[in-house]
Image 1 (cartoon, rainbow, N blue to C red):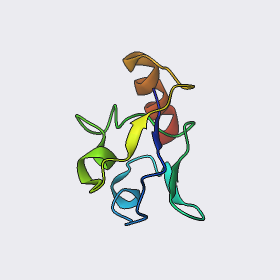
Image 2 (image 1 turned 180 degrees about the vertical axis):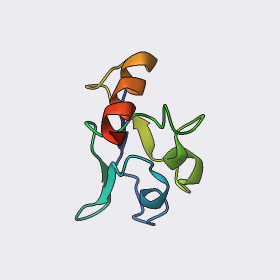
Image 3 (image 1 turned 90 degrees about the vertical axis):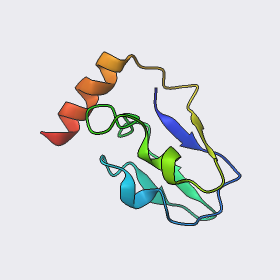
Image 4 (image 1 turned 135 degrees about the vertical axis):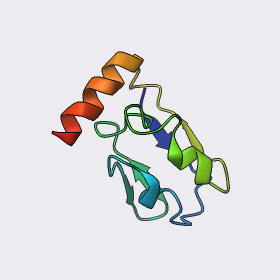
Length: 81
């Protein structure tokens, strides 16, 4: 499942640099996570790094992108190729 940043984002810039798939980018008011690039850090880290550094805890599961761990790992490998 991909993650998404909700409206509580303070645009602090903490999350973008820690994303191993470069799935996070700045938007007009806050940051956005590209669900096609987000693997919840599967294949790179033990847990989503953006959630670890987010000071306002505004990163949720994206309900429209439900993927198994195997699917996330395959996506990660494809992005690294």
